[in-house]
Length: 118
Image (cartoon, rainbow, N blue to C red):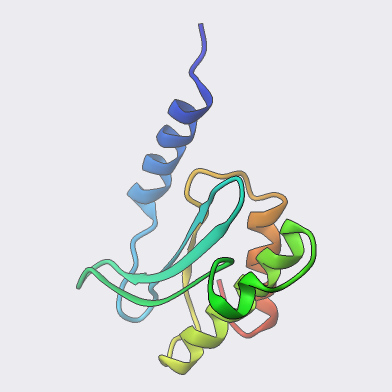
């Protein structure tokens, strides 16, 4: 008997978090994906502070038209712009138990295009 999808995702998330830790020099870019929205945060785990955040539910992005993947790419660009304003150019990518595919991949590609390195 196998694991449920949520149990499997939780196991993967814990395994990723053992390795991926955000520092002040290289904070963690954390992704949360729901069925309807996608959220991204740049987090310094040492001090427990969220440095920048963006989501598809932000006012400027909520009006955007397009597929979920296109909107995720816009969220990636928005988080990269906010992070560079805060003086961050390198991050550790935390896919949050999701597969690096579809919306998660397009968010990462959008963030790379806007100047984040990971």
